[in-house]
Structures are given as structure tokens and as C-alpha cells.
Image (cartoon, rainbow, N blue to C red; front, top):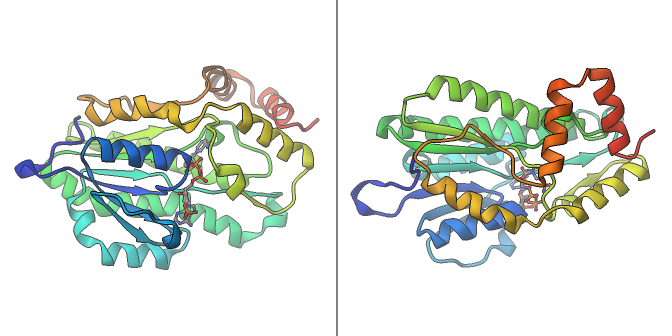
Amino acid sequence: MQAGCADSGSPPKAILTGPLGGLGAVFLDELCRAGWQVLAVSRSAAELPVRAGVTFVCADLSTAEGVASLLSAQADWFQSADLLVNNAGSGVLGSADDQGMEPMQRQLQLMLQTPIHLSLAVLPGMRHRGRGLILNITSLAGATGIPFMAGYTTAKAGLTGFTKALQLELLDSGVHVLEWCPGDIRSEFNQRLHKAGAPAAVWLKLERHMALAPHADCLRQQFRRLLTLRRGTPVWHPGKWSQVMAAFVASRWMPRCLMVRCVRRYFGLS
Ligand SMILES: NC(=O)c1ccc[n+]([C@@H]2O[C@H](COP(=O)([O-])OP(=O)(O)OC[C@H]3O[C@@H](n4cnc5c(N)ncnc54)[C@H](OP(=O)(O)O)[C@@H]3O)[C@@H](O)[C@H]2O)c1
């Protein structure tokens, strides 16, 4: 696969969304270390550090307007990128009916429509050059669901579906589309979570799972390998092995009625 092969000896180019969070900061570090040029997209212009080889741009990826202006302002990057990492994400914690449509739509935009839109923008250039890598960061939430996070769960499950379809379409094209479907990884995710009303027990469980989760640094090795692989493994599951296996077994082999009970209990309900 070797995502990092650019023409004419110039450094390969990556577009990374969400470069300031737990996972994104690790990806950014590793790309810089490997000599990539990076377009790093975040909302927080004020916090953007100066880094050699990194162009920081500000965009709110939870709105269609934010995505459209990013695509038009950075068209050259999207035509010439060797790697796209769809990483930016954040959730809302609250019952589906209390949340209403607007927060749902923002989550679907940020973690499903935006990754699709950015993928469609890089694909023509990658196809033309016969190589490239799109890395979609999904979540085990898409497999089992998280109670009181319906928008997040739906967006992640949708992105898994999009990734699978592209993998079927692009086999042997030289362009690879991979899914990273992590379990809990310690990051600022819970701090950024918008709390719209959920049982305290669920929030306490989310905090506990996060506190016990491996630090985002554990992804370095895997990400480094991914940048140099010659063949792509279609889905990777970083995180705690026991959690990944439990979610895998529950979502594939458990009758749904049993899975619902187990997942509810895991999140402190009943
Ligand atoms: N941590 C976990 O346990 C876990 C597990 C499974 C999947 N994931 C997924 O991994 C990805 C990274 O999560 P993380 O844990 O590193 O979370 P994080 O620490 O909260 O970082 C999230 C990143 O997304 C960016 N972002 C959020 N909303 C945005 C918006 N509207 N427009 C542009 N950028 C936005 C944030 O930057 P600004 O706020 O500065 O814009 C930040 O850089 C997410 O897609 C998440 O769903 C995480």
C-alpha cells in the first residue's frame, strides 16, 4: 500500500481532521516524524501551534458550509493528497427524543457526511495516480450501540458502511480505504462531550471506562505500521483487547435481545 510515496521525491501529503485531540495529536506527531506535509483541520484556530510541514486551517466540520468553504479554499490539497484521515468527532449524551434533530444532524454531518464529502474530494486524484489511502476512524459504538448516544452511534455505523462499500469498489485500484474501529482510548473525548441529559449512572460508566482505557499513545506503533504497509488490513481494532473481543462477540454472535441486556448493564443501566 505504502501511502507515503509521492511523485518527484517531494514529501507525501496528508489531510488530517481533528489534529488537536487524543488520537489526532498522535497521528499528527507520527506524520511529522515521517516527514509528511500535513493539512490539519480543526475548529480551534486560537490553539493551533506552529509546526514545520504542517498547514493548520480552521473549519467547523459539523456544518455543510464549513465543509464547502474548506473544500474550495484548499482544492489543491484535496486533488494531490496521498492520505486522508477522517478523525474529527464528538458526541452528544442525552436521550434521542430529548436531543431533537439539530444535534443529531450536527453529529451525522461531522462523523458521516463530512468524511464522505472529503473522501469524494480526494478520490479522483488518488484514482488518477493509482494510489492513496483513506483512513476512517469509526468506533465499537457502531457495532453495539451506546445508550443515550444515538446520533454518535448512527454516524459511526454509517461510516463503517461507507468504508465497506468503498473497499468493494476500489479493490485492485491502488487506492485503499481502511477502517480504524477503536474501543475506549483515553483522550479529551469525554470533556468535549455535550451533555444533554442522561442518567448519572451512564455518565459515571463512560468516565470509568475512559479512566481505565489505554492512552492514545498506544496507537503510535500501529499508525506507523499503517503508513508503511504494502497491503491493507480492511479493519483495525485498536484499544483494550478484552473490550474489543467482547464487542465483537456481542455484535456478531449474541442474540440481539441478550446483547441489549449485556450492553445496558455495561453502561450502568439495569
Ligand atoms: N477516545 C475514544 O475512546 C474513541 C473511541 C472510538 C472512536 N473514537 C473516535 O476517534 C476520533 C478522535 O477522538 P478523540 O478521542 O481523539 O477525541 P478528542 O480528543 O475529543 O478529539 C476530537 C478532535 O475532533 C475535533 N473536532 C470536534 N468537533 C469538530 C468540528 N465540529 N469541526 C472540526 N473538528 C472538530 C476536535 O478539535 P476542535 O474541538 O478543536 O475542533 C479534536 O481535535 C473521533 O472520531 C472519535 O469518535 C474515539
